[in-house]
Image (cartoon, rainbow, N blue to C red):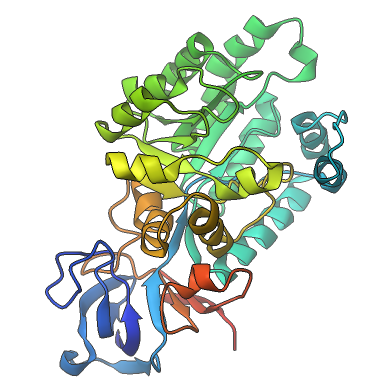
Length: 394
C-alpha cells in the first residue's frame, strides 16, 4: 500500500542532487512530499506533483527530516550513577569506581531487568526522532555477561558492537594479559554471532595500541567490522590504528592534532563526536569545526551511558554541537543523520530518497534550525521507522 506524505514546509532529504532541492548537502525541498510503499521510499518531490497513492497524509507545513542515526550508545546496563554525576558537578573527585560500578550492577541484574531498561531508553530515543541506534556491550566483562549483553542489544537493533575491551575488570587487575587473551578468544567467539562490530576503548587507562590491534583483529577474523573509542582522554595513536584497519568510525576525538585531522580527511573513517559526553563531564569539546573544515566526515551520537552521558536525545546533542563545537545547524543535522549512517557504513538510512528506508521524523517547527534554536524543547511530533509510525505525540 502506497502512502503519500504532502505539504512538508521543509523536507530535508540529505540528497543534494535532487532536482527539486536547494543544492545544499541537506537537499531541502520546500513544500515537499514523498511516497512510501511498505518499508521504502518510492518517490520524493514537491507537493504539486505527487503520484497517485492509496492514502495521503497532510503534514500541514511541518518540517520532515531523516530519522536520526545514533551510532554510539551503551544501552545495556544495570544500576545508576547519579551520585557520581552530582559529585563531578560539585567539583569533587569521585572514587566509587566509575565503570566498575556499572559492571557490578549489570552482572547482578537479570535479563528481564536489563531488557526493560534498554527498551525504556530506546523508547525515549524514538520519541526524540532516532530511528537507528547502535548498541555496545561492555558492562559485563565476563564471557557470560558480554554474550547476554550483545544478545539483548540484538533484540533492539542489528547494529550491535562487542565491547569486551571496555576496561580490564578488577578481577584481572594483576592478570591483564590473561584478560586480553580471554577477549580475543572465548569471549569474542561467544559474542560474534549477535554482533556486527567489534569496538575497543583505546585510551589512557584502558587498552593500548598493541592490545587494541590484537583485539580488533581477533574480531575481524570472525567477520566483525572494527570501530574504536579514540582520543577521548589523550592522544594515543588510536586514530591512526582506526585508519590502518579501515575502521568505520573513531569516536570521541577530543584530542587530535593536525596530522590526525588530515589523516581522517583522507580516509574512509568517520570521526564521531559525542557532545553529550563532553557536556556531562565538562571536558574539552571535540574540534568538530576543524574536522569539517578539513574535509573529514563527522557524525554526532549521544554516547548514552549511565556514567558520562546519560541522554538519549539527539536534538540535545545537536544543540550542544552548534553552541559549543561551532557547527552550523545544517552541519549538525547532517552529522546526526547522514553522518551517523556513514559511521555505520549504511546508505539506506539517514537520507530520504527513492529506495531508502522510510525512516523519518516530523518536527512541529517551520525549520530544522529549530532543533538548535530551541534547545530542550521536544519538537518531534512523529517518528516513522520502516514505513510504520513508531512514535506519535497525539
